[in-house]
Amino acid sequence: MESSRFELVEIVRKNVSIDPTSRESVRAKLRIMLKRVLKAHGYPADKKEKATRIVLHQAELLSADWS
Image 1 (cartoon, rainbow, N blue to C red):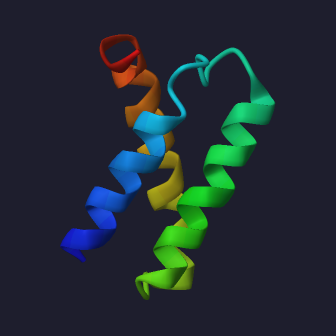
Image 2 (image 1 turned 90 degrees about the vertical axis):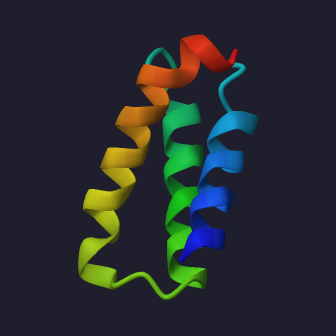
């Protein structure tokens, strides 16, 4: 599970050049990539949506610091 956390962070960091709060297409792309990582690491299907929302929210909060 630790490797999936690092993978999620890298995906978010690579996609913060454009503010995810202003572009729905960026949020949608990021959402798809996050779900793929969660699936690849065996994350329970019934918890993927909530985990994705949490990560997207965190990305919005951190995007100013990372860009």
